[in-house]
Amino acid sequence: MENSEVRQRKIGKKKQTTRESTTKQEKPPRSICWLIFCVIVSTVLVLLLIGYINSPVKAVAIKDYVHVPLTGKFSINYKLTKGKRIHGLPGPESIAEGGDGKLYTGLADGRVVCIHPSNDGEIGAGKVENITTGVIEGASTTDDALNIGRPLGIRLDGNTLYVMDAVYGFYSIDLSTKKVTLLVTPNAVEPAMKLPNDLAFTSDGKTVYFTDITSQASILQAGYIALTSVCSGRVIKYDISTKKVTVVLKDLCGANGIQLTKDDKSVIVCEFNHHRCKWFDVKTWEQKHVLHLPVMPDNVRKSHYGTYWITGTHIDRVPYYIAAILRNIPFFRQSMLGLISPDLAMRFFAAFVNTEYGMLIEVNDKAEVIQVLQDPDAQLCLGLSQATNLSDGRIALGSYFAPYLAILDKPEK
Ligand SMILES: *[C@@H]1O[C@H](CO)[C@@H](O)[C@H](O)[C@H]1NC(C)=O
Ligand SMILES: CC(=O)N[C@H]1CO[C@H](CO)[C@@H](O)[C@@H]1O
Image 1: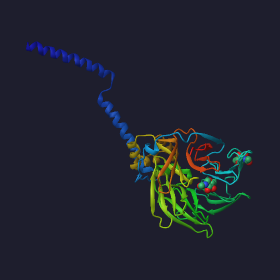
Image 2: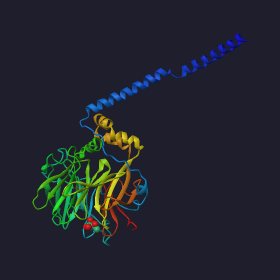
Image 3: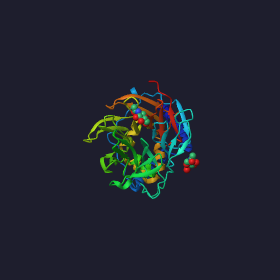
């Protein structure tokens, strides 16, 4: 009995061994797979380390970031999808309307243009007239490699258009003569402005506050700004009559859009890298409110109803914890900047983000959200950067990179 049992076991074992050896012939042994895996992982780590050390810029952790999910007031909707597009206008970031139904905007090719109303008065439906060429001869620029402007923030006061240009700084345009006057050049402050972005006037028109997104990278190196997340943004005050320039706020995390509140007591400043907008008292420069958002906020403008419209775009595509790793651990971002060009690195990281998502957030003076209009897959607007109330009740939607300007149909209110 015992003997036969042993024999049977032996036979069984033998059979098993034959089966094992056949599989061994088809697949490499486990230890080789393991070795290959280790080699790949260590090569990637060494590459990342080389990138990290080689990177021309230092990345930092994004601190105080608050994750805002698409729930509650931010629940997905499609209220920002119905309207029309005006083609042939690349990157119309900021828009202002004149009293006569004319729209003014700055374009990616440096021009400031006027979009006339149609013959029967429809806003945005007439001819496009060039107001500037995009080049200011002899003017100093934020980057020696730039020879054409990039008008970003636009405000209209009577017959004068005021422009914050990422290349030339702050200038005005007399709309009757089209004469351009430089008001604040990039090197008027220390350190020099690298990416002037938006501007806001007090209601008496005597003071302007404007933003410089960062003092470290020009518009040519936009990838650096998003990926290093260094907070070197500023708000600068300019007195129209005395021409005095004062830095009033610094260390902001990508100071983008700016708007004074109705009572002129605060400015709303959007820090796009940190997905938030802050309210600052203009006397003490203390922070009064902060609003965290699910999107990267861009410009802010007043609405018709005593409220403010904040626009934003880009939303995390990856699960929260992966985005949190990328935000909290600067290693990966810095490594990529040391391995590939900032543009390529941006494209790599863009895979983690839905760049089509557009959001228009209406807020009140207390930084409370009133309503949120969304265009999740760019049906109407791509790269939403500003919402401007139009006199016919519609809303013009600017964009940093779309090849058109969009106008939202009159919202039901
Ligand atoms: C405006 O300027 C652009 C670029 O220089 C040019 O192509 C276009 O023809 C101009 N438009 C008019 C109406 O002159
Ligand atoms: C109430 C309000 O904010 N109205 C604004 C709508 O837009 C025009 C043009 O930009 C402004 O002049 C109004 O002040």
